[in-house]
Length: 313
Image (tube, rainbow, N blue to C red):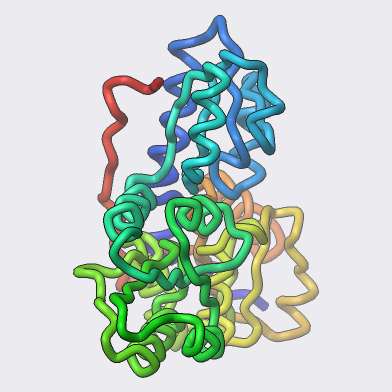
């Protein structure tokens, strides 16, 4: 019988997600007479996308699905220069909702692409990775073994540096970076790694809870990289940990079969608080005596990104 539910803090929306959502909502309000097209999911959460669709915002996979001259918005994950050029060549008005921390990685890539061989630590096929790798020739690595395979592909006599996706596992990435240093002793390290503050803080919040719970519930979409990293982190110590996208995914028999008495709840950086509230409400309807409380060592996320004065380029 579930007795205690601990809420992780920080959890849910990060500053970059809030920035992207606010960007689109503000643009929608200021251009009510025009159709707004968003390329890909603005953030990786179906509830967020669905809410925007209900307000008339249209989502497309590629820019050729929008008419020439229309307003198009790039998602929080960023895009490659090729996508930007397509928009410009078709007279599209560009709204760039890319997370500022992702934009920072793009700037790094452009700065060193002529002088360095670049290793990119990321997940193949992820929207952020696709956008960043479009800035320069890069060698993608997802594991330590991938680094070893680069040994004969890179020229160790020429400058080498590395960049990384912002939503990676902190601990796993450290191992990959260490392997890069072993294989390429001359590698030039960035002044600061690229994993964003929100990813780091949410992973730290989960790590501090694991000794005090039976299982962790991660609220987030399957295609949300930061949500999946939270789940992987939790399952390393608490194998009963699981992920749900919404309250409809709850399986109460799972709690009883596995005798889960103390549950931790966190939410990926693209998961809205309304999902957390709905899940807690449904848990309480089944386990009315369960106590819901903030985990004692939790703290608030106070980071904010200000929208630019001009939204369209």
